[in-house]
Length: 216
Image (cartoon, rainbow, N blue to C red):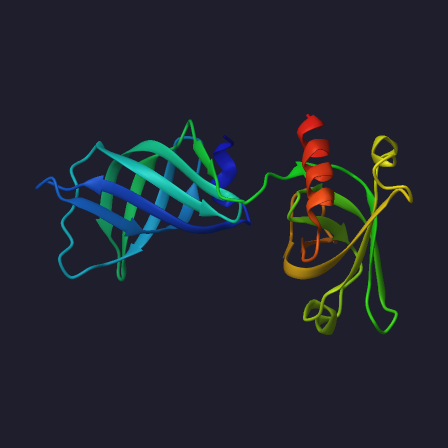
């Protein structure tokens, strides 16, 4: 996996796990302070019974993201006390193992879509990625907060090879706002909006699943 996952906007928690001098497992919630080409520096609140680990202690870095969990083997090179925190210096993760936590995998695919609300307000966009559970899209349009509270009717324009299953060439379902992310690389000035499907029937789910499996 990519080394820069530590700087990804989807990161929610980071843990440093290692055995102390007494072979007792330690799990520290840490925050990334700095990262260069060789080392990472993490900060953790200073506990009452802090005991400095040995240099070159083997450890595991566990990173929780919105998509799943990344794990990497590292070495703790040093740990020093600052005014309020413990600063861990560790080797740069070179290889990540990934555990996907989504109920369904997402695939990047561009399909026209719209979301219409009861008062006539419409969001028009092109999908960024898609799963049987929902869809995301970038937009320069700032969606008012009131429309993030209520579901709307989402219409997704499907590829031609799926039209045989959907005579009108469209998938129509109820969808609701989940979250948004900004300042994403190569999409400056745009916001990524994520919506979940609420009333997708079994047939539609199966068709979408088969379609997504064909995507590379």
